[in-house]
Length: 77
Image 1: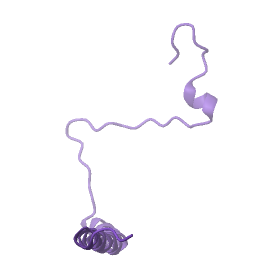
Image 2: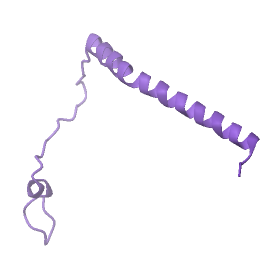
Image 3: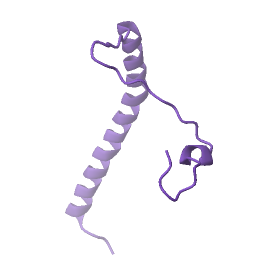
Image 4: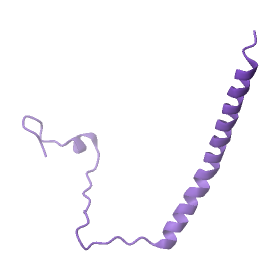
């Protein structure tokens, strides 16, 4: 779809990006999600994310503790 005064080449074709059309679901169309596949996906995501989140939480806790200790002791010259 080209605007007035613009070249007829679309942005997608000039950048080498492939245009993809998606079908939008109409009324009565339903999506089936396999419960076993969903469970496997969620478990896989959990195993990938939870250890990192725990590590980040630990580092955040240590940082807050160190800031509190530094405030109590005051700056050393």
